[in-house]
Image (cartoon, rainbow, N blue to C red):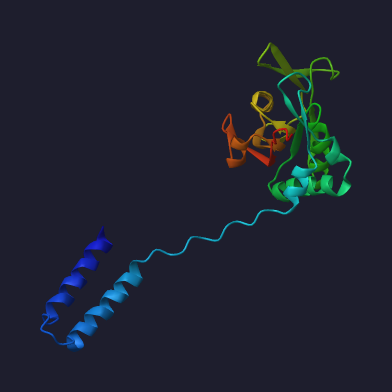
Length: 234
């Protein structure tokens, strides 16, 4: 508002000094008015938009290596199969490297992997950033004393468990899984770790629905995904 007022004042003052049209060129005053108007328009012209952020070329290779299997494990489900990616060491390494580049230097002391495919990516990330790995498992898989978190699925319930004492109060933790769809399992993992006193920094997944690409949050924690889930291509 202040810039508009100043602009109008300059234009009115310039117009008052310029002679009226009389068939002549207008002289120095008119030339000065035109010059002033040029200066004003250049001053208020918005800057060009910032350049587009470059997309990591490794992501295309990761996306291409994921096979979409229709109607597995049941009718209507488009299953994102990561096993072809695991058969390509270079692409597998690219995926791990991208996660490591993101989380190095963030003071993460624990990487918690969700059974079962979180066990594939989690340990590699943990070793690379100098953190311990905590397996989050289904019931009756961990010996000894455990802490449990039950969560609701579309049909029935499920449960995640973690060893008591696996995480220290206040320890910064990262949760890793291969895919996020509804987010129910990740929410259970967040609550499980927070009940044990952990400071959950983020959830990291290889694949996610498109909405998760825009820094979607679950239980107030950001979810970071590398590539979007693809539909079956006929």
